[in-house]
Length: 427
Ligand code: GLU
Image (cartoon, rainbow, N blue to C red):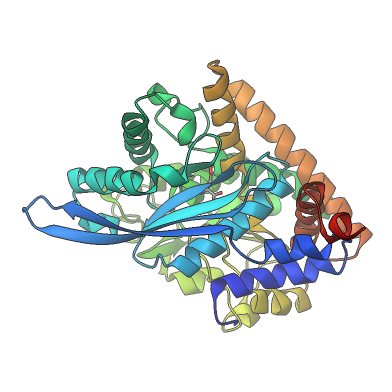
């Protein structure tokens, strides 16, 4: 694997560049993040001590509009990771034709170790330090791994206090009462569901004869597992960070969600209630889940789950990337050789940022939409862009990932070229 995550992300770009004719100036611009901010956030802990946390915000490219992307709270957050995530956001917004550039933020911590008050002070302290770097027309944060509407609400409130103006459009994924959009919490999974429903009939697959394994049981994983279950797919395995469960007959996903909410873990609880009576099931690890012989594999946890170490052992026929960057570029090559169809993150998980865009539009117009309207517009966007990317993949006989990058690059190239390239300055 290349030395950094960002270098690995850039390899996808290189592949797609073979099929597009964008100016070399645009390529040069897209190779580097526009601006990266590192901050040290002092937080007064509940016991009176002071801890300083490292935080980042990266604005990768704003050629197509203000930059957009989530903020993650995780022990593995580094500047390199945040830069790659901001790179992906740039291509995701372009692939979906959302008028935003790409950004990302993160704070290095284990959020489970902090009390709610400590998390609030940390969130507000982070906004104090990045306030001049963000704004409704500059850069708009949102939730990501281990951040949620409550945290977005604190952040919006802090920004509004600094600016002395209620500014809902500075952050998306807020609580509904603070200007959040209906449907935002389920949007990532719902968007992925629309992609799956658009793609599977093309392979002649019906839900009832299709098995699914979902890695990750957070906001995205749990909801996509339930949507697929309700649509008739046989969801045979799910996992969270502690481990997972497998049942050849299929799992009762709504019951697992209830148990997970009550006890915070899948592995420990699944068999203690009545839900598993009559179901043959076994405990499996996250690594085992990835290697199951299923039709659809949905990695919905973190990046770098399928690498050149385990790609050879993957048996799924179709992989839908709900997480950002779960497959490395080296693993892509191995999966392609095995004829496994991979549907890329920048398309599959774009439902989140799409409804974030809807939220920003609603905040700026001051007029709020019904859930039906949000989901209808989301479906329309996800379906039409999936079809366009599918057509590109067929035109160039390339993977859906490369097709999604081609699609995004065409739009990014046009925006960058509109501002002038070497040819404009030398002719
Ligand atoms: N964190 C989400 C993503 O990776 C959503 C970003 C947003 O809504 O701005 O796509």
